[in-house]
Image 1 (cartoon, helix red, strand yellow):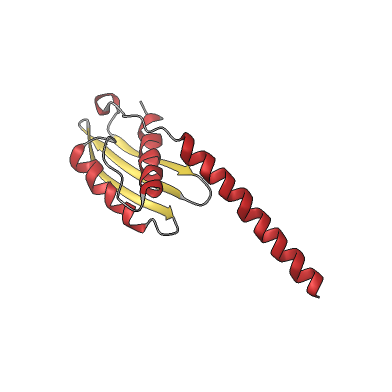
Image 2 (cartoon, rainbow, N blue to C red):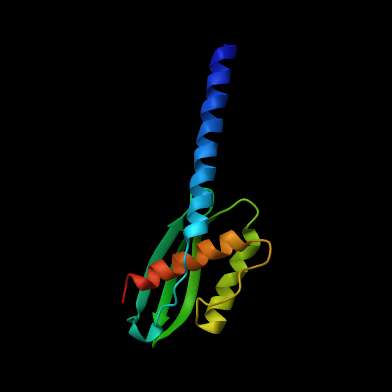
Length: 123
């Protein structure tokens, strides 16, 4: 019985260690490009970015070359909840070139990348 519990603990710990390595690599390599909204057709687009420990899925509405709405469909995070405020900044600036939310940088960057993926794949 103790051996089984120990094995389960090791498996969970090993998976977490692998997820953490992937997460750190994904965050260090993430590049947020800016999307030319004048080239995005009117419509509703979904995009996501998954770094295992932090992930986001968004729905972006574009009309007349402007983002009119961004819905955060999923935001998997640890302490990155405050990053969700970045959606308002993106809409206000009509750009992905906005500052990350202090204390929630990786979640902010994950949300930004999800928006870029939604719009960038629909040019």
